[in-house]
Length: 73
Length: 469
Image (cartoon, rainbow over all chains, first blue to last red):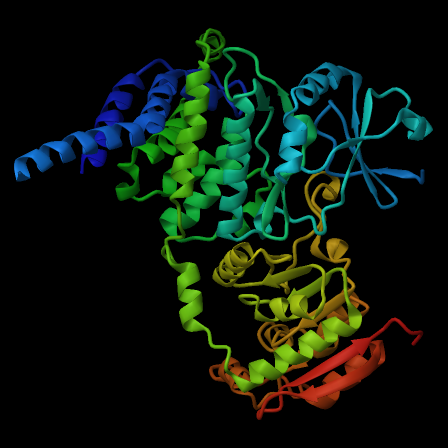
């Protein structure tokens, strides 16, 4: 569910970003270049999150796990 | 060194060309690409990728051994020959997916070493058995700080979009890709996607947004050129982010019409206890053991049962072909799982891959590439002779032309499969019988073996046309 919410939020943000003036059609790769310029930051953030996701998940789980252990005692 | 022939598909890149010289595959590196090649080579990444089997072998040829016509190039590289060149429109979904992931994995590894791929052509990936290998050495060049991913659009059109066609819509990519050699345009795919798929960030960012930008660019006035030129640079993290996003997404894609458990289903839905199948497998094993083909073609390979029997018998390498994309998918997953020297491909035998592309020579047709030592065509001929109305004589003629020796199974008209094919149509095949089939074989080759392998009268015919007829 959080994944869907994240996707939806990004979709809304990028729809807003896309309301820009039209670009020229230089060659078939122009749209790809413009795309990279627009969402490069999101891609970079995604890479950082992706690379650290498992570490973060493990850290959260181990912290919650410890709390649970204490609660159980 | 014998005469060199320029590979008809090697004309786009001014950095160098590929030539065939006898059994050798040679690649020139032109002066304009000398520096980039040397930087890539000296980084050590080439030898690492070659050792890992990710990049085709590359050996510099001593200048003393160069043919005279190449005196003005910077380097001459020799590559090993790929057993069978295949094209993305002949790949199953999982083959295209494996090729896409291979391309991205190489890109991700290269970027860490300050190297990138200059393009993202799916034709630069080939298969040796089920293992993808990157073949275009000169696509590797040093990374320039801040540059955009030049191959992004090509990657989407040649890898991502064909995969999405099957993963989202359940439509195989093969026939569309075959008619559109540069891939499936993002603008066209975007028009077809259902609403549900549009709510995905991946679909939005890699299909809908590029399609929207492309449409805007098509409609935009020329004054926008300056805006495009002034576009910001792309950070290395963002470059890597695009690669990772696509890699993570594509790794999760499966055909919409088969689900995730394609290989598991295979094990549950096939039985190996069938007597008929057992007799056929034994016959194929014995045939392969006696011929020891270096390359065997299995026409109508289905999920690869008899390709495996041929390998067990002693065939070195089997190229299988089937019309059913799901069967090719399963055969590929099996080859991958069992590490077989087996490459299954999609083929409509009544309309095989043609010579096409630039000068109708860029991508070679099936028959030109089908240079095999042996053929098996089991439960196959009736699909052409009855299913597609190809005269029986023509079917035999074509099959026998594909390899000097082989086994062709004849399926008689009273067989339940043929009866099903004729159930709702008029029988317009009065000449379809075993005598006509046998006569057709004898006109083209020596008949060296005949074995009935079912109660309905299915018969294996072994032919040999190596002797003078």
